[in-house]
Amino acid sequence: MNIALHERIRAGIEAEIISGTLSPGDRLPFEHELMDIHGCSRMTVNKALSALATAGLIERRKRAGSFVARPKVHAMVLDIPDLAAEIIGKGQSYAYRLLSRKIKAPASMEERALAGSGRVLTLEGLHLADGTPLALERRLVALAAAPDMADADFTVEPPGSWLLHHVPWTEAENRISAIGATPHEAEHLGVEAGTACLALERRTWRGEEHITHVRQLFIGAAYDLVARFGPKGN
Image 1 (cartoon, rainbow, N blue to C red):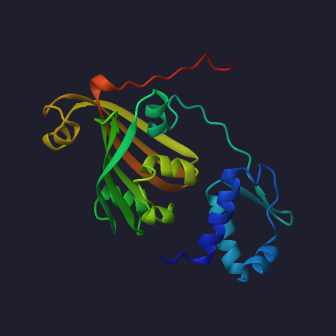
Image 2: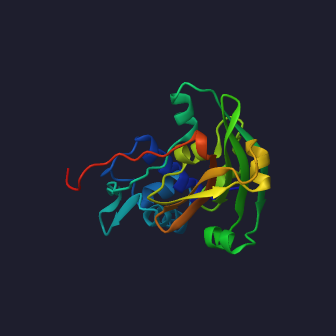
Image 3: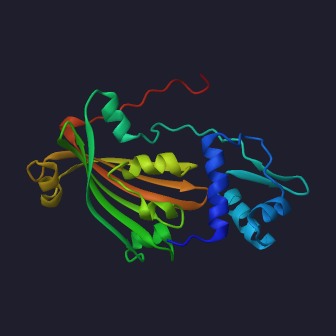
C-alpha cells in the first residue's frame, strides 16, 4: 500500500516518540532541516508536523521550533489492558483466532463517526485462554489513524496488542454492561444462547482523531474487571 510522504514523516517521528528516542521537551529538527532530510517541500513537512500537533504529540512554538509534548495526566478508573499479556501473565496460553477481516468505505453511522470519509478496517476475532474461548471481539479501526494496520499480521500479534504497541492514544472511553449472548455470539463462545456475558466497549482517540471502536464480549463466569484507586490527592 502506497503511503503519502507526509504520513511517512509523521509516522517516523511518532515512532521515535513512542520508543523514547525522542523524550518530552526534545526539539525536533527545524522545518528546513526536515525538508533537506526527506527531499520534500515545506508544505509536506508542515502537514506531518500539523498532524503530530493535532494528536498532542508535539508542541509548535513560534520562532522556536517543534518540541515533543509533555504527557498530560488523566485519571481513569480503567486503563487499556493488553488482553494477551493479561492471560499470559496468569500462566495460561493465549491465542487469537481471526474470524473475519475487511477493508471498506464506512457504511453505517457508527463507521462514519469513526472514520469520516476515510476507509475502515473491520475485524471479528476470538480470544482464547488455554484453548478455550474467553472473549469475542468486534473491532473497527480508522485507517487514516493507523494505516499500517491494513497489512498487519494478526497471527503474530492480536489487533489490540498491535494498536497498543504501534499507535499512541491520548483519550479513551469505556462502557461496561451485562448482556445475554446472542445465538451468533454463543456459537463462537461455546455457550448457550442467553448466557450471561460482560460486554466491554472502548473508544480511543489521538487528539481529535478517532482511532478505534472495539466491543469485547466475555463469558461472565470467566472474566472480571478490577479497578484499584485511592482518595483524590493521594
